[in-house]
Amino acid sequence: MENPTNNNNSSLKAVIAVLAVLLIGSLVYIFKLSSDTEVVKTELTTSMTEKESVMKDLQELKATYDAAIAENTSMSDELIQERDKVVALMADLNKSKGDVSKYRSQVQAMQGKMKTLVAENDELKKQNGVLTVQRDSTITVLGESKKYNEVLVGQNEELAKTVERGSKLSVTNTKTAAYKLRSSGKQIETDKASRADVLKISFTIAENQIAKSGDKTYYVQVIDAKNNVLGEKKTESFGDNSLTYSFKTTVKYENKTVNVTEDLPGKDFAKGTYFINVFDNDELVSKTSFSLR
Image (cartoon, rainbow, N blue to C red; front, side):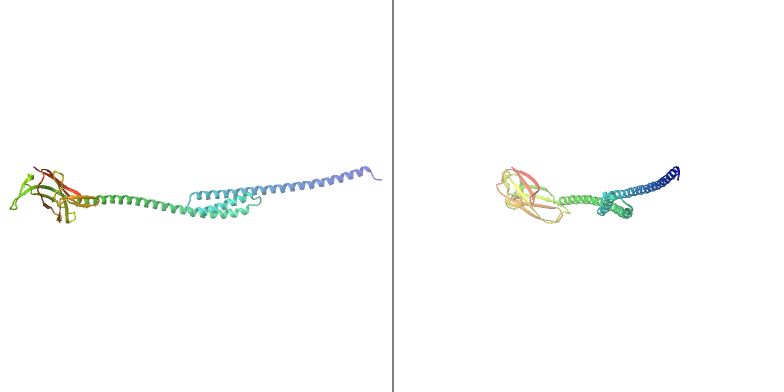
């Protein structure tokens, strides 16, 4: 007959052995589970760090493109297209929850493209800078030339006016006297209206080397004390102006001094002051007066 105490000890040992095995198994499982968790945690941490790094590179790319676009060069459209690609990749990266290593190669390609475009943009800015300097220099030169031309035009206009003024003939020494005609033809000067038969009018055309030579016509107007025009009393029109004259005289002028003398016959001359005006066309160039008693 078996001893009950021995049976109980055997059963207890068996239970202890089973528990020990289970404990060891649990410890092994827990250790493995803990190791797997650490691995996953490490992978997630690494993945997040890589994602942040890639995102940072993309942000720097975008900032570089924004700065280049702000310079508003002829490459702006191309720069905007590349900047938009960067923005699209940033949005895609934000949605990503897995491995981001695939984005790294795209970022590197974009960085290479960015360096090329920025270098081209910088070169374009340099060329534009040179062109701007050349343009400003040209504008300055043109401005100075314009001012110089304006001065020359002003000087030429003034010179033309001076020449025009200088080329005008000067009529001087205008004189008038009354004469009595004798039967012999001799003329005797008189200041009595009742004895006067003719008025002798004379004037001098001064020498002028720059004036145009040729025939010169002058209109002489004699007005008596009663405000009557003596002589032919013909009227000549000059544009909007008209002139009633006593006679006209034509002189052959050759740039040398010419003395002109013309007689104006008449009768019943009135007493008083007479006015004599000499016109070059409708321009009054000389005048004088005299009196008969």
